[in-house]
Length: 145
Image 1: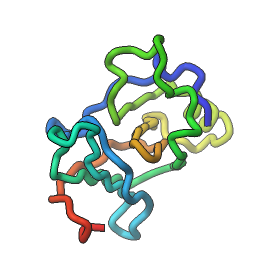
Image 2: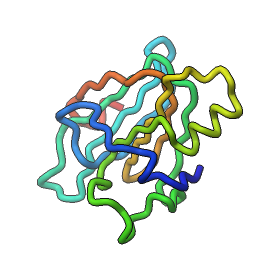
Image 3: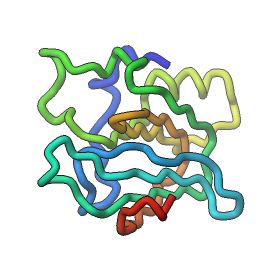
Image 4: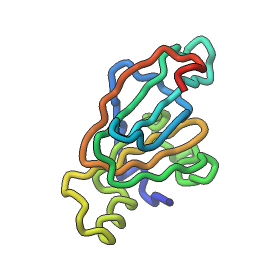
């Protein structure tokens, strides 16, 4: 999925005041009655800045989602045109190319739908939902997966 106008259509989103700058997407998907969840493992490039807290985002309603390997999203590769504020993991848009096309092809999309974009160091997730997720933190260890 190519976003031709990413930096014009998206804005930085802070899901919680304590989020880290960099995460890996560990798990993503529907969890039955619990909703749609994304588990993010802290992965700051500088070890001393890496948090010990994993972030879990949960939506009750998700209209659509797509997961992509980060190497297949050339519109997000860093260049001299990349804004300074762009080195972040979370973005949101109401006017993205993807959401616009999705609305054209699916007439039942709620008017207040948002395109959430999570930019992990390993995977990227595009999530369409008409609500913001709840954010919780979990002490990271290999057992929480």
